[in-house]
Length: 72
View 1 (spheres, helix red, strand yellow):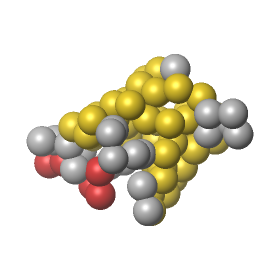
View 2 (cartoon, rainbow, N blue to C red):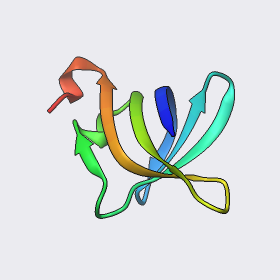
View 3 (tube, helix red, strand yellow):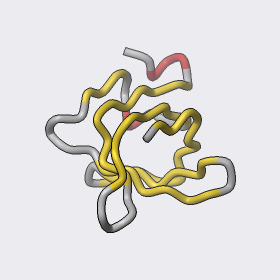
View 4 (spheres, rainbow, N blue to C red):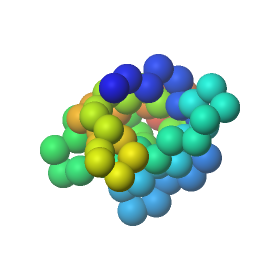
């Protein structure tokens, strides 16, 4: 599953709550998630992952899209 532009609603304890085209998605990071950029400064992200049985997305790769100062 790919999330092209997820607007960050909240981020805590490795869990993003995102607004993706008007739909709320929960994105879980794991120790194996490839991270590009400063997640703490993220306002918009791209993510690749797979949907878990319970409906959330398990992130395989997350990239901070903006702001520019948050890029790695």
